[in-house]
Image (cartoon, rainbow, N blue to C red; front, side):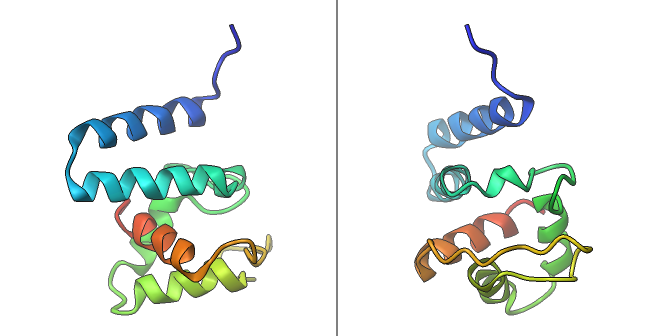
Length: 112
């Protein structure tokens, strides 16, 4: 049997727990996580640790006090970013719709 990576296993556990909880917030969290996995966000990011990009919990914490945090992150996801978290740029995610980017941004902000 092929083993899962620690990140994939943790994501599967979180997804399963969120889906079984049944609340709208849990569904939104599961949708955000599934979208992040589907769109390869987790290739550069982890929820809890820095990898190629910052830990998503660190992103949530950094922008938690911004009134426009969800919109700000949505645009960073769509347009990309350079120099905010170091020298590795985040490419624009042109494959995403604005609604998908908004879903991802909202999900990230729940991770703080």
